[in-house]
Amino acid sequence: NIEKVKSLKIPLPPIEEQKRIVEKLEECFELIDQKERNDQEQERLKLLLKEILLEKAIHGELVPNDKNLKPIDVESILDDVPYLIPENWRWTEMFQCYVFKQGIQIEIEKQSNEISEKYPLPFLRIVDFTQENQDKRYVGKEYSTYVIEKNEIVIVRYGASAGFIGLGKKGVLANNLFKLIPQVEMNEKYMYYLLKSSYYQKKIRTHSVGIPAIKFSSLNKIPIPIPPIEEQKRIVEKLEECFVLVERL
Image (cartoon, rainbow, N blue to C red):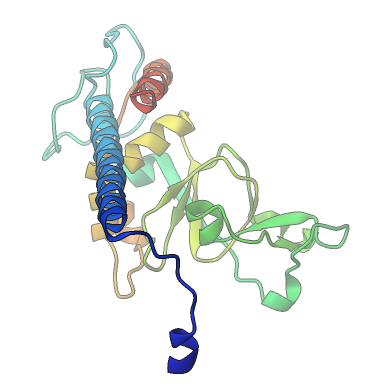
């Protein structure tokens, strides 16, 4: 309303002071913008450092290799391997180490926003892994066969987040995610970090169809490098130690 705008009261400094206020404001705004640019650059560099560490880890270059350690007993790939690894590591296909189990679709009427005796189990959706800021959902014990444990790896199968890797939550898994069930002895954090590396994120995301959605038959054939179990643990320890140092930068 023009008449209301006309009647607004404004504080009016002398013209010289108006100029000084503008100069100081613009100086402060530039400092704020510069800090935001620096923060963004710092975060970008942190991500880059973490990716370099992940690449070294999956190539067997992050910790010294102990040649006396016993290899994991899996069928090895001998030809067309993506890169060289230590001699007691094994190249194998995903299906040699894991099978997949998809979650379940549950109607909204059978979910609750509050935990109770009737709804005791957390219902884990994509947003519970990717955003962490959504209202929690709970479902009944009749869905307990779809519960994942905190040490089980989860992958988003459908939608814009297809290929996202999750770990560390317990609850009933929704149908647009699936979990990895190990068939040989594996350190879950080693596999978690392996799948989060840019190399394997590209591999996983290219094996999608349509919406996008990850195709199990293609995912089964992805080659993965498997160190001896003791070395998997040492790799995880070193990675997490280095990640802490990166975050302190």
